[in-house]
Image (spheres, rainbow, N blue to C red):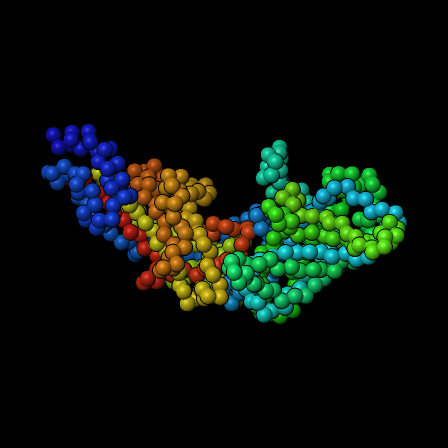
Amino acid sequence: MKKDFISKYKPAIWIGLILTIFYSCNEPNDLGMDLLPTNDLVKISSLVEKESISSFTFTEDSIRTDEASRSLLGIFDDPQFGKTTINFASQFRLQYQPDFGTNPVVDSVRLFLYYRFLYGDTTTMQRINIYELNESLIIDTTNTSGGSYDYPYYQDVDLKSMASPAKIGELGFIPEVAQDSASGDTLYQLLKVPIDISLGEKLVYADSSLTKNNDVFLEYFKGLYIEAEKDDPEGGTIITLEASSAGSFQGSALLVYYNNDENIAEEEPDTLYNAFVITNLSARVNSISHDYSGTPFEPNLNNDTGPGDSLIYVQTTGGLKSKIFIDNLSLWQDSVNTAINKAVLVFQIDTIASDLEKFPPPSQLLFTYINEDGGEFLPVDYSFSPTFYGGRLNTDNYTYSFNITQHLQQIIDGETENLGFYLTTAFKNNEAKRVILKGSSSNTGIRLIVTYSKYLQ
């Protein structure tokens, strides 16, 4: 009779328990008790699992770097994460067909690059070198206008081989950041790079048939490659470019200043210029490389054997991720009549090793599971509710927490294999961030907090 009762009402009890966990603030041993039958058919328990968890630092798979919401540029020698080098290439588009007037003469050319955010050392001289592209960039139309082809670029793209070897511009600068004293908003910073006048002459003296539309023009002037460089073997900075136009912001641009007969004839001649702009329709690509030589984690990098690392390293820009194993999950499959009410995995930042004041951590991480083909997928809990799934930085205790309740239940029910997990950054190609977390072999490291219901026989 008892078995018939459980079989008949088990789905309703499970749903009631989960809803109660979701909305209740009671202690674990009291959760859902008002919903249960009076004859002690269900036992509520909780546990904190740490011993069966192991964690390792791995290099991230190559990431896409084309048409990111923001582009990156610079070289940074991180004391914990090694050297990161990021270069940039972009198309520049016509705003309209230019008319340079009668007998135009080029005066000067400037590349205007805007940025607001940076990551690294604000005291190190940074240098950028400018080259004209010889090979066309192709924009991924599936990201913009729903076109019929997909042409992705990844971080290992060799942009330098696509450019002329002749340098046409360079600038040394020390990156800086400033905020509006009234609003607190971060202000735009501007880099003005002098460009060889020969490029201006190429653009101004082009036949009108070459500037009749952007399709033709982008075959004539394919864009610019911007290479990062620095003299100091330490320090450096990654700046976040505000490259393409957005809203009222016009974006970065190439300006050609010139004069002509009509302007000279004026009583007070103006300074004439034409802007070639970066827009959302411009192909924009980063090349990114990492050198982990001499880093604390280099000896164990990409090695998932042994007890696990005491510290794990996670980094944006196709850098580093952590591989996680929770071995004892398979043992739950032998435990019949068990329902997971709530399962939360907590990662603790090592605030000293991370140096949070100098290097702010990522605002959000992702926790994915590995399938039998080695692919990475978000657990079903994310589809249920991204907010409930979690992963955002808690600045009160500097933790990242993930609700994997439904995924853990799938493992127990034999619907999903327990082949391991990855901890990665949520925003991979449009910001420079990193964090050091306490690993599985740390006493205060990774912990899985589980509240579950046992249906008694």
